[in-house]
Amino acid sequence: MSALTFDWMGQSIPFRTGESVTAALEAAGILTFGPDALGQETRYFCGIGACQCCLLRVDGVVREACITPAKTGMHVEALERRHD
Image (cartoon, rainbow, N blue to C red):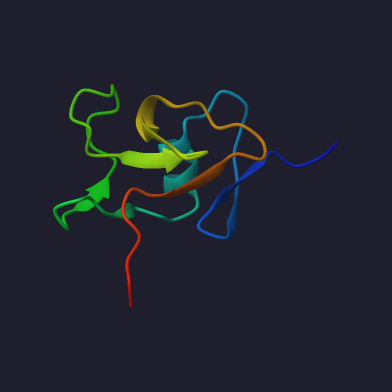
């Protein structure tokens, strides 16, 4: 049996069947998801997709991570990449 994982910014994140992207990230100790277009940190908040505080890019498409089911092999990254 293979582990259920997705990629978060180069890190492999395990998840359980039926779990959302935010639930898996939170279980992995990731509580903020990087800046939005205005530089404010994105994070899990409402859990129903209404507030859009958890917007992330999932396989290149902007999604509410709290209502997006985690899937094996998906690539998840911050909405806006930090440029150091």
